[in-house]
Image (cartoon, rainbow, N blue to C red; front, side, top):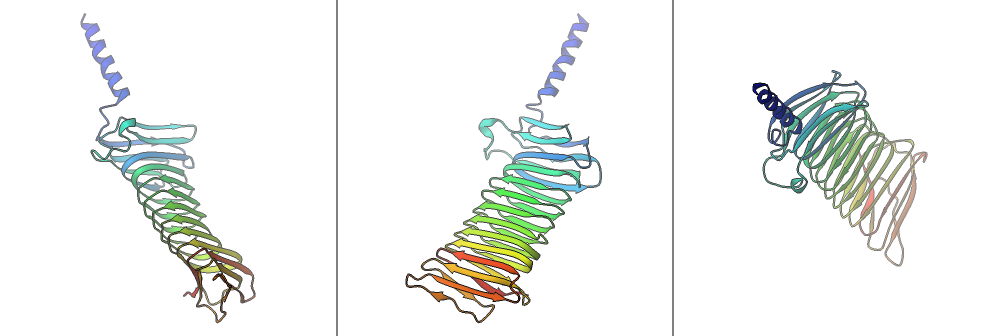
Length: 301
């Protein structure tokens, strides 16, 4: 009889530790897994703050505190992919009650990272592989990334610094401030103000609706810049040694501002404007357009 009691107690504890539905809510956490130094890491967190830092160890470590509503915490590696997932009850996935997660996650610098969050502020730095981010309403901060970065955000400000690879950003009602070394840049925003500065530009495309955009950086030979907006202002701050064919046009009510050369825009009878000229040898290409806003070139440093 004593054996059965002991067995039942042990079995009960094992079942509780496996399910973990109540143990994880708001719990402090400090876990580590050995992983491949060039694998993939997928992080899922609905609410709170998450910091992800690249390091030189072949390990993924998670430290901090889980969401107060946590139903399950998944931390495992399968087929060279590591999963870090804070699971909330379906009915509470967007709840504002309780505190969200506050986690610091260390991953190998060579890992490819995928992050998905809802109302999570995310800070990512020191990674050499690609970064793919999907976010609904959290702020995003990126720094010291050596490869391409893709960001898809609904509402939340985006700040990027020291990004070396291709940079692609799509946002709705979030501002973008990027100071990078990326040669290939694509940014689209709705109700967003966008500021991008890069050392050398091979291709840059920025499109805004109800927002302003500015682009800084030296256009490389044979490089291309395309800026467009609806009800906003878009300006490229060009270096004095610019070599490009330039074409700007507006819809009725739009305006072209040229503070780079003395070339002037021409107006049509419906109020649209056009401007074409060549700077330097005309190796690159700059196209700018607007429906009802301002576009143009200004002198950069």
